[in-house]
Image (cartoon, rainbow, N blue to C red; front, side, top):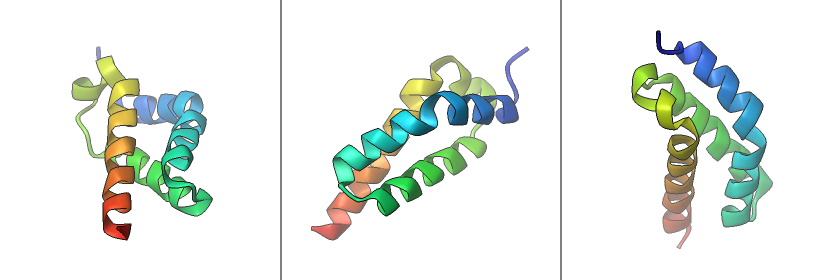
Length: 77
């Protein structure tokens, strides 16, 4: 049985929230915006089908986070 979205969200927060923040901050150089990107990434996870992301959760999270950071950087330039 695949994990529920609640299980995936709990795992994402526990294991990846800190590393995602560090990654976003490294790209954006702004703590507030990095926090917003991480929150947006976790919200987007809630909208996914659990069986589509459960086998590659880490890479999915970092890809969504990176893409969101790049969107913000493009808008700033």
